[in-house]
Image (cartoon, rainbow, N blue to C red; front, side, top):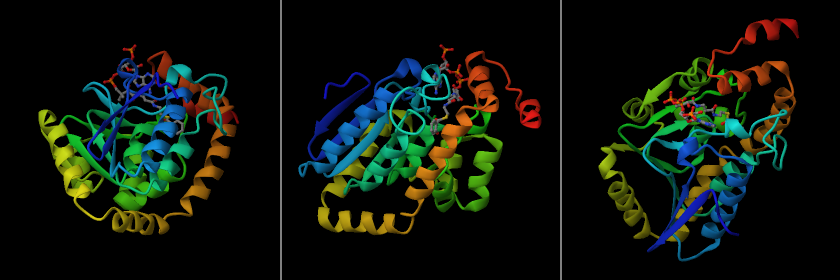
Amino acid sequence: MKYEDITVNRRKGVAEIQINRPEKYNAFRAQTIEELLDAFRQAGADRSVGVIVLTGAGDKAFCTGGDQSSHSDGGYGGRGAIGLPVDELQSLIRDVPKPVIAKVNGYAIGGGNVLVTVCDLAIAADHAQFGQVGPKVGSVDPGFGTALLSRVLGEKRAREVWFLCRRYSADQALAMGWINAVVPRNELDDEVQRWCDEILALSPTAIAIAKRSFNADTEHLRAVSALGFEALALFYGSAESREGVAAFAEKRKPQFRVLHQER
Ligand code: 2NE
């Protein structure tokens, strides 16, 4: 598959997959997800690869979730319930039998934040920011985005993240257990490489078994996610959700409550 939206850099034992849409703050459209699925499948199957790194181009954003400029008529125009098979990607990141490290080089917002949540490890530059925006823009990522987050942060914190849609600094994210380490931005590449080297020195089979056993505890969330995305598709057809998409495009505050009361 020829990639337009991502790049893959292979170096000894590491496949680094980069979302390459810096002009969109590395937001993903349907094509981006298809390319990411292909790249993760290949890196997952390649026995010469021991660690996969996921990152974004530039130093503004890791990923800011669904590309709002490709969101119209109640969906994103591609495959799956909402026209964006991001739930398949989340599952695949969990399924590849090797650690996936999120190299967080800026905003990890919305669906981009969910990618950090499903990655096995996350290392951030000190200017990175974390948060959810779904309820600001008429969306939600039900399944791994919500319920797995509560396993990572604890119930109260995860609900705070989704119900208030605040932004959190890298240091706050570290204190909350959202990520594993924070480093100055000019040290991010080297630090991630150090973590890769340590992993690559260990038994790949032991690590694969460990990863699958960690996943087992939350495996039911795949079904919650599938169900949730079907519900999300119905929600995307509503005036309330469309208002969120329109408000982001028009750079104004959404007016949700009136539409909600009229339902
Ligand atoms: C990322 C954030 C917080 C940055 O804020 P700020 O104030 O620093 O910059 P600004 O002006 O908002 O954004 C800079 C440029 O990036 C674009 C903006 O439109 C803007 O473009 P210009 O006006 O300069 O041309 N941009 C940023 N994020 C984008 C996106 N996701 N799609 C398209 N363009 C984007 C702030 O921008 C923010 O909060 N972004 C909202 C992100 C958002 O709504 N993401 C989708 C959430 S829903 C989702 O991801 C999802 C899911 O979780 C599950 C299923 C399906 C979808």
